[in-house]
Amino acid sequence: MSELVAVSVRMYQVGFGDCFLLSFEYDGPVAPGNRTERHMLVDFGRNVRPHHGGDMEQVARSIKNRCNGELDVLLVSHRHEDHLSAFASKRVSTLIADCQPKLIVRSWTEDPDAAPDLNKPGFGIADRRYVEALRGARGFMAQLADGFRLDQTSMGRRLKVLASTEYANEVAVDRLRDWGNAAGAKAEFLHVGKTTKMSTFVPGVEFTVLSPPLPRTYQKIAKQVSDHDKEFWHLWARRVPMALEGAASLEASDPEALTRRRENSDAPGDIGPVRWLTEKVRKQQVASLLRVVTWLDDVMNNTSVVLLIKAGNRRLLFTGDAQLESWNWITADSPVAATNRKNLKKVDLYKVGHHGSRNATPKASLYGLWAPTGATPRRVVSLMSTREDVYGESDNTFVPSENLKTGLSAAPMVLITTQQDKLNDDGILAYEVAASTKGTQGFTRQPDVPR
Image (cartoon, rainbow, N blue to C red):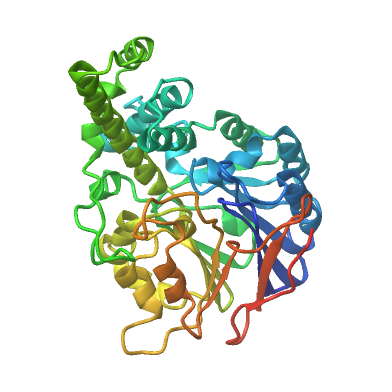
């Protein structure tokens, strides 16, 4: 019987977004299909403001060539545009569809059965309310992105950009749904405790879903924790006091109120006390809306599928944009937290969470497993798909975090980032690492892939 012998990972430079192709090599043909390789695509998208990345059609063509026109698993970690926007492109989606993806994997929050009907099996009331709130909030973001008139202050512009990022991405989502319903394909929506079929399509490889948990199991996944200070990659962090149940009660979540406010958002009046007061009130309204958008961004990040992949002696950790709440569950509050920590200590390759943000790679609960105080760090190869000047307003909040980059580069750890390299006008760039699934040798970098 053929055995798994090697695994490689390509990180495509797509600007501020994620696109990873995992390839698993066997020493002979394996069923089904009697092929000697299996391929798994993890996310494909970017934030287009600004994109600073390779041509997405060329990237899709490279993916098709690398997997010889057969894609076994397509995983979209969560719904944000920088993880799935490429699928909205007709030319890109045609190339990916040509690869006939056999298994489409998404977060449980995208499951059409996790809907308002209280009689649906497998979900509790808290789970369905959570999904309802997410869907309602996305509709609210769509109104902000599609014409709600805002002042042109830096806060107003930031609100507009964030709202667009949170947009529902319906075209891309519809394509994922159609692929999952195609003949010979399957779709699954994962949460902790749900069995995945990925090993059926990638034989000999173990996939463990570490997050997200269902809200009825872990209520904190739907909220922002109140004190991140000791976990963030800086000394102080702003609180975002926006819990799930609080968002629904905001006046701004009323679509009719939004319409009325948009229609009545004329000039604030003549210069004088009335105009001054009007502008102060508008600033407060924009600040309140910004808190809602920030809340949704954080909650959506924590719907990310977090996968621990075991390929022989190699362990790979793919995290989407999971933030501190997810890591608290994985390493502290889960009934199997001790087992999770034990397995995470053996990670060889880490897909850096949330493009290098301050709270997606917590010091104590994740990084500390590889680089404990007073000990030699473990050799972990980290892949960070990111870009400067996209998110953050100060040294404390910039993405990517310089402190995090320094930590992940501490020898013998290795950090590979898309941050600096430039592309030709029509070219692409992929960073590839590979490792044997046997022995003790970890991942090593391969020559850059130009196309």
